[in-house]
Length: 145
Image 1: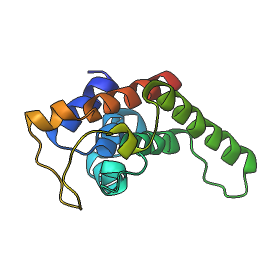
Image 2: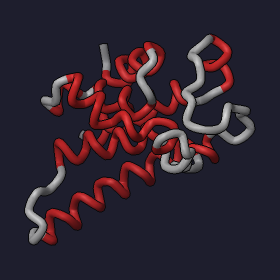
Image 3: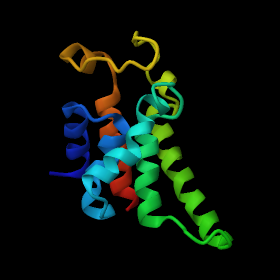
């Protein structure tokens, strides 16, 4: 199964958008599933359902951080290179989707307000582009890696 297929499958199983992307790349990040799921759990729904930065972008950023991030705060070249990598991911994502902001990507989709997650049903998946955004993020990551 490809990373995009796995990411979409995980999302449809009930993982949030950020979890689906990070978990799909566990074969290359080396993160165990429990750690990856917990680490990315806060970023679903645009950061805790606040509809800010799309969770798929956050999940992809975590993948890029694990694989190509920096750890020395004094290594300004590594920091610059990593930020460039994240900005390139964002450029590609925006080129395909028009935005990285969850509420803009979900424009016109009526959903429940607050922190209560919505029940996953066939109508849930039909009215949201999230499964496709999960797939697109994984495709972009594969291209960049």
